[in-house]
Amino acid sequence: MTDLDQGAEIYTMVSPWRGAEGARSMDLRYLDRDPRSARRPYFEPVLQFAAGHEKSEGALRLLDVGCANGAFIHYVLTRKPNWHTSGIDVVPELIDAAAASFPSAEFAVGNICEPDSLPAGQFDVVTVLTLASHFDTLDAWLTHVIGLVAQGGMALIYGPLNPSPVDLVCRMRYAHKGAEWLPGWNVLSQQTYDSFLRGKANSWTYHYLPVADLGYPLDDPADELSSRVVPARDGQRLGNSSGLTYQMSCIEIHV
Ligand SMILES: C[S@@+](CC[C@H](N)C(=O)[O-])C[C@H]1O[C@@H](n2cnc3c(N)ncnc32)[C@H](O)[C@@H]1O
Image (cartoon, rainbow, N blue to C red):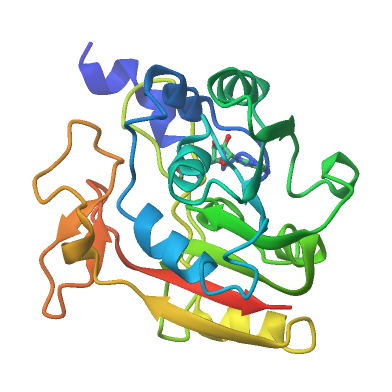
């Protein structure tokens, strides 16, 4: 019997796709990372966009949706000590770890697709960092993000975005027996965001970030699904070992 025979079910004709909303077991890996040193390449530009808020010098209220172990909250706290920071995540273990690491911030378990699980208040800035690409549709989560933004505030959505009018919805898995199909790499188009945001937000801007300058790995990381810079004429693309490449944008949405 060959290895292929043993792994035959990986060729199943029945779609084993899981729903897009909710936790991925792979995100428990954030528990193994130190949130004080786990600085991601996009933290600095996202904070700069947030600092464009007129309350930036005061007690600005920031909520990070999908905060994992609180690394971005830590990055903000160390640079904007006056800001009032909060984080939500759907994984309770991550929220426990974040709350233990950063007692001066507020953390709660919340699912951005479930309005009843979300904080009651509103925030001047709501950040959603590398989470939008988990969801197959915008209405499942973006309506709730906008609802969390106070009048005059902004949402900052960082992740893959297609400047061309084509939407990609996908699942990926490590190609071994029993591996779970994972959401996380959908690339919706700017045009789809435009259609959704019309009438729901005052204005919005797409900032395509020069990923080659942000500090993403240039070599293949040990994890085949992790993003690395992929050579491209415009130097703007990330990719992983699936072969998919994508541009990264921070969408600044004013409410
Ligand atoms: C790819 S990680 C990004 C973590 C962090 N924002 C960053 O940029 O490093 C996505 C995070 O969103 C959380 N998440 C997934 N689905 C969620 C949901 N429906 N509501 C809230 N958080 C969610 C995951 O548990 C995970 O911590």
